[in-house]
Image (cartoon, rainbow, N blue to C red):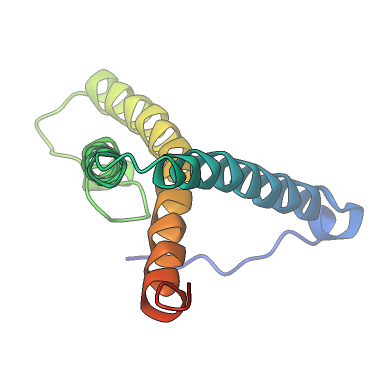
Length: 133
């Protein structure tokens, strides 16, 4: 496995990398607010199925992420790592398809992470604050 530790100083200087990270953080915060809001409303209305629905949704999204990402590995395969019997066109198609799949898998994280945080917040509430009322 090759670790690339080169940093692009031009992106850091003009702030595009910082803007991209801020946009991702804001998107995560927005998706958390929506997901947690629906969850809290369901709990407030005493919908008993809301927890099972969210757990099922979380499980389905995690399985879809693992399938689309082709495992948990963060690095895509290199051209030389693909089977020798594949011709150049098949290798190129595979790598292009892999990039598309990983992009979709990355987008799923904007739902997976807020769901995990929602359950973490709910567990903290149940462990420390549920008996106070």
